[in-house]
Image 1 (cartoon, one colour):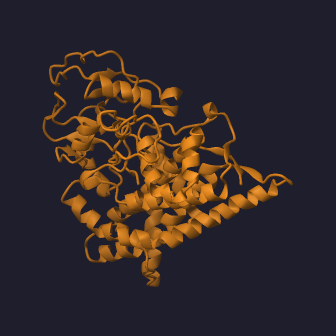
Image 2 (tube, rainbow, N blue to C red):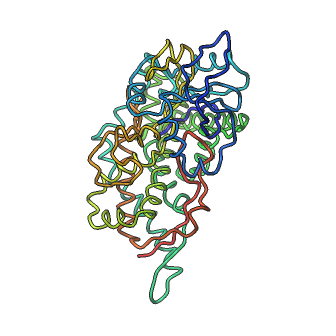
Image 3 (cartoon, one colour):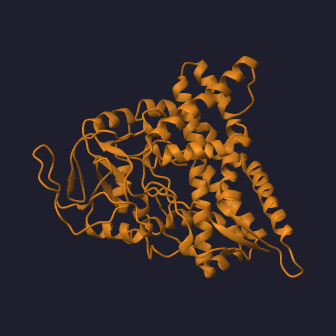
Length: 443
């Protein structure tokens, strides 16, 4: 899962030569961190951020980036430092405190205070909120979802098969599809709908809200509208269930029962659903797209995997490391000065942890820019760490394992249906995913 909390909109970092920030009497003078000014996300950064992230990682333990609104962000790119920060309570995530801090620095920065959930909270609220839902994502409960995930996967593949049949000839059965639209998006969203007990026919609404809430793209009005629409939608479903005394065995029922026990408010139910509904599909959508693209780029690794599809669970771990679906973890802020690799980040500064950069760190992973599906050096940070580690990590891995196994078995001869340079990537630093992936399916 990813976050349903908005982050300050930032532009693709293009680090320059080391130059200390100009002195400001009321602000700390960093010890030569890498700095960059606001710029538009360049297409080269969106399609391949790793050279830029590598330069950041090599240049300094901390880089400084300024958002479009002028908010200063400290970026940590090295594996050991990122991992340490994920477990360090001095890097806080309470969104209300963060918003007050941002308001004291610049105007017009929205950090998503309209949504309250465990990823935007610190203890004790975080502990209380996570306790309500953590049992639903235990290893035992997730494994029990396997038949349902397999059923949804096969239904979607049957739809792709029908498309291929319509384009069949004597010698081949092919079809051009958009893997994101036709497979990678509907699979996890249908699974989340079953988990929550939500109407699957509304999945396009969920995707629209997700895009507005997670990426913002500079449009705060769209963000607020998405939050309001989702809140009204969730509470309408909840109220209808209460009136009808309808309590199916799903996660929404568990949330409503927690409200009856005084453990959740209405706003917290909406926030929890937003996190599960949005975060429950974003990671898997992005991971399925980038994993398929990685296999198309590397026929040798693809052949190795197809030769024995029982290798898939290990391969999924490498897909997560190689092209992490969450490139930047959600925004944190320091509650006291913190030393990172000899650079002091002062108190009350905003910090981004670059999971994508950490997972390509040569100090931690051998030959990190290569896809190595039988890699032995485990320990990627794609799902974060510490108390805010992704709650749905096991479910996301299960979905990806089942989906890729079935897809490769059904269509082993699949090829890219466009030039790679024409692929469109999501216009956000936080997520790493394709807008579309046109494929020609071949058996």
